[in-house]
Image (cartoon, one colour):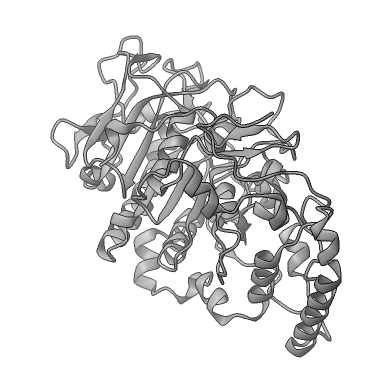
Length: 483
């Protein structure tokens, strides 16, 4: 199938060796010979830009703050205090820095930054509950489970990494903090991956420690999750020196020379940028310093909060100021790997105590510190910060005082670069149940992020069957919230 004239095709998925996991690349001396697409099989990003529409970039970087579990945005940015039948909940709205725009009383610090933000109150998707694929890709077919598949479409960060693949760089284009999505549950969830583009475009992920102050805790009485993100595989195996590692890299280069003919035939790809990054992780002081949260002053650590979420968000600032294009910070569930309560945003019971005692105060502290830090360093004008989860919560409060799963109407918060300051777009009905005005599909949010980055949302990449797949799956930017 030939792509339509309106679509720019960025690459092909035909390859041998889908690409090796980054952990494999980082094991001492194991600088991989194999990997995904070869240069001969695809257009370069430069060619793609020349051939298609190219919106002016408003942001150099994106930080996606991902509240895993489904945050109840009607208890955060779209309060309905007069809703009947207990729908409105217990929290009161307070004024923000934007006249006429109110937020929850338990977000007083965030309220001070609404003049740098835009709220979209009419988001929906059809991808099912606790499905992360729609948020990262815009693709919202309701798959039978949450598990990753190699045939999944690529995430926004993976597309950025793919477009950036030919640039010589010491730091990754796409980073995921504080650990891969689902890692705390001993799973690999669909969403923030390279998908059919290849695993070499997966996020560069840290791992983390996670603990609570007084374990064990009740699942519906969660405690603050503390801990820190950290790099893995940065130590050489016993007996491997930097000289030996460098010799092995030279040996790999010799193999590359012999494999050129194979590559010309399209039978084998290469990973020069990823292999160089793997080597740099082992040898570069700059890389290790960028990911070393302990280099931050104690005052900064305290401002962000001595929590895992706070530490990961502070690390995101370190990466943004060093030029990393797409950084994900996930407030995730660590219950199985570390035997702590899930402490995520899945509030089926005790919705209001969980929000009041834990979720909102910790989010408020970290988020406001992050926005203030970016602003003070001159980075907010070139960084887009997006806050969302994989769904919203039900308008009706259940018998356990909780809110259940809801995908029909929820909110997304955007701040910083490319955003019309103080904008509010869309409206929910008087119970925050259904969309009253200006519906926004999640793919439109994805398209908006691409547009602010200067990437055409209609650009396509080829799936495994060589069919062109638009990166935003038909989503259109929300022009009314763009500056």
